Amino acid sequence: MLFICNKLIASLVAVLVCILPLCLCDVEKTDHGAASHKSDHYKNGVHNAVFDMQALLAHMKSQRALWIEESQNNDSSVGSDNVGELEDLPEEVRHRRLKTLAKSHDLNNDDNIDEQELKEWIMQSFNIVDREEANERMHEDDGNEDGMLTFAEIVDKQYGYKEGDMKDLEAAEEGHEDHDMWKVISEDKRRFDAADLNKDGILEEEEFMAYFLPYNYAHMFPLEMERAMKELDKDNDGHVSMEEFIGDQQDEEHRQAELSQFEELDGDKDGKLSPEELRPWALADNHEIAKEEVEHLYMECDTDQDGKLTIDEIVRKEEEFMSSSATDYGRIVHFVRDEL
Image (cartoon, rainbow, N blue to C red):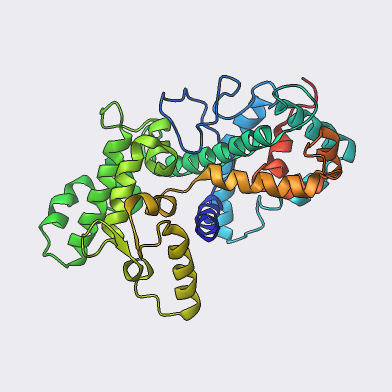
């Protein structure tokens, strides 16, 4: 679906600036959009028995310096050619690790990966990507490197202002760029406060996940929907018209794309979007994206078309899994234990 594809593209663009630092803290007892699939079988979306956690931790410490160097050199090839890296591994090693990884997702031990198990695998990968993205950003903003973030640190790193500057920004005349910046920062503060569940004025790692990726955390949904409606509902009638949704888009191709997206969102075909109809646009649904990837991988890899995906079929179709951003095999294979 077009609106899902647009949201996925936006998410992938953001992910390009980071790579595989994982949060190993205890997860709060909050239902998540992208992480609601997790159970006791997982620890922060990673099977501890399958992955070499020491290697993951070492990789986490080195990646920030790597990406800083990449951005300075403007070299998009640094750390990005997962397929090339994977092909450097001997075939025997690749296949053994893929079997190990696939077997770890065979929760009922029947040597098949059914659709639900494959979806769980994909959702685990999304969880890893979310965490690496949030961790990279958190490291960037954590000025005193204490593993926690105050709002003052975020404002300093992201906007270039000190806490004492806020009153001057607020006092600027309506319409002045300083006052507009104050509005932006104020909205950011509301998101910070919503993510700060224990109200101590500090975001620890899991709280920062909710702040940075609010579409994954149910307690952040109301604020995100309020923000989306405020952005689009110009006449404040509680709905988003087609004109409000499309905006001032001048390019005809983009106008048609926006119109198609609007029509898909408009479930009751009344020519306007309710907050509930707008929700898939405002809040990315990883479950829907995972469902589409399951259908794709089954179509490509279920060679005998019996509705089952065996471990052997997965190994034979290694290239599909190697290149899939959903299963993330191209990177993850480097951290799968050779022996358990």
